[in-house]
Length: 389
Image (cartoon, rainbow, N blue to C red; front, top):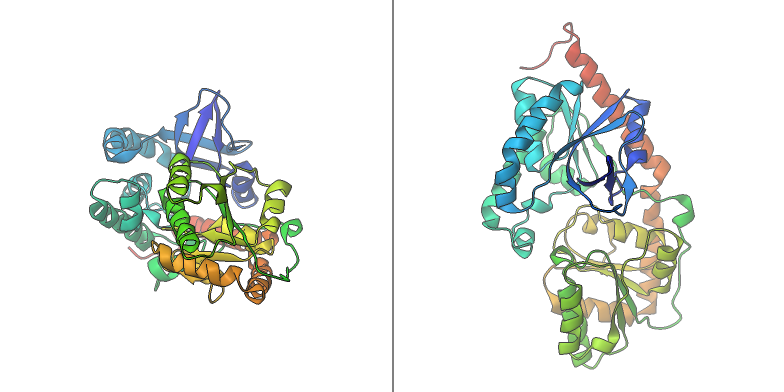
């Protein structure tokens, strides 16, 4: 997690804001968050992280291999200084910060638990797309970091089943699965039906290599070249690949059919955009638990995605394609848009899946995890409780 600091306050554009961490206060007296933070010159977008009994200990912000090499000594010192401030730690591997914490905690036999939110930095294709030097070596280091953290943990929680199967299979302690994507009751729509073919494709999220928006444009352009032009594509979001997306669409002769709408804030406006679409497409190179997919499905909009991360757990048969393969993606888009019954079936599937992401249900599971973490901390401080060396 990366934070932005402005006038002593810390902000995040992710869902890990104060209200998320305040849930821990029903189990613990105080929460201390150790995270990278960069100074912002103006109020940043997002929500405040800190608040009553939730404090932030900032780490130096680092990006890229050389940036981390320059910052690792400062991170190590900050981590060591922060160790006495907590009775138990929750680590989010894999990351350099997690590795530093894991080393210190294991040396001191301090109890910690692990929350698995994704494993993108283990994926060589993702690292290569991001321009990371020596992607295979970085992947091996991150995999080793994650494996070491899980091996020494007292409890594990993950946002998706695939993370448990991949990284915590056979773990000896308690294991929980609780998505960090929570859907409020008002968001869940009703199943939709299509009287005829669909045409409106929606892609939501950052325009960056991880989401492969260029591949989605190429897939749609292949459809147009093959004579199927009953589609229009709208990107909702911004990012470094915005200009290249617009340029590629013009070069491939589909500039008038591809729109870059910019970001839309979470809430009724985003819900309305989802309900207007006939198909939401996630052409992701890598994913954890994709919020966009869950929110679209809960709104009753069909979703097509790649076989990465938690998407195979979420999507229905016929709505999953290989990643980095525009021809397969284009064919799937054509098949679904041309079949009203398939769109209707996918809409019903999404609404049925929404119950798994009920905010009240997931909040209760996470509380169970936190209670288990507290119990393990109390055991660690009780000399009468025997523990494995």
